[in-house]
Amino acid sequence: MEPKLVNSIALLKNLLGYLGDSEGQPPRLYMDLEGNNLSRNGTLSLVTVLLEPEEEVHLIDVTTLGRDAFSTTDATGRTLRSVLESSTIIKVFFDIRNDSDALFGLYGIQVAEIEDLQLMELASRSFAKRNVNGLARCIERDSTLHALEKQRWQAIKDKGKTLFDPHRGGSYAVFDERPLSEDIKRYCTQDVTFMPHLRDIYRSRLCNAWWSKIEAETKARIRLSQSPSFRGKGQHMAMGPPGWLSYNPSASERLLRSFTKEAPSRERILKVSPALLGHISAPGESVEVDELADMVRKVALRRSSWDLDDEFRNFDVTPEGHGGFHSGNSDESRDYTACDKECGYCGHCDY
Image (tube, rainbow, N blue to C red; front, side):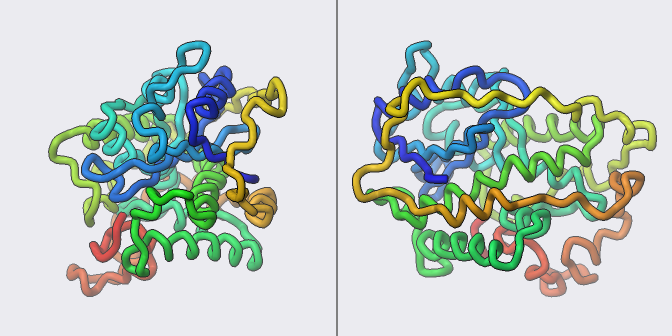
């Protein structure tokens, strides 16, 4: 699965035209953003797009294209901005808050019709809902990677983080450096590749009542991210919605799952010719990701071993002792190593 670097107007037009009919279920677009201090006060460097069911990853180079990345039109007048703002095209993100902050603050883009995978994971739990998880934690916990496959995944993750994580001697400025590092390309590809599978497993655990909660909270997150007071880093970013701690759908509500009915599978969109998207990567920039592609094909996400009757019970009556925390009120008593090390809860790392 070689990611295609979209770094010219012509290539962007081809990609927009290749999207075809992207409306409705199941989602066609899985997206992630990267940048140097990704926010209204930083840069937006890359928009990673996974197209389903083709399983193609495209890296839209915002550093190179600038505002043209969002204003360039295809033959039908479609732009990346119109896709992001569309109320009929579903876009799946993992934690929309900082991505929305950057899109709105830097380019005035008001995202719509977002499915927030982080909220889906939180709602699907039958244990503590006090803190959200990062994507890496979700992959670690909810995938059945074999030992060798997990080593490959971890190696790609670690190589990328070494380049951009300040705590490892890196810098987020690496996302703006050109030519783009091959390790960063792999890191971006890996981030979105697991998202469709995670969505399937979390969605299968949800009832209509929880789905309504997710939709409402996703819109609330977007509104908050566009407000002047929004802060995208810190302990508060790892806290789940307060109202979710005590929420417990009734037995009859848990049986209502009409929204999870399988939608017809999307047909693959065939390219008119092999040259439609061209060779996206510049000469000398081909990405060797055969191992990653092989690993992803083998990934099978497991359902929890809990019974369906237990699946939606709320076990937050005594939240301490769940979610990787020791009992006690002080921060010193909390076992942060048992939580997602990237969630930002302890305040010692970027969210």
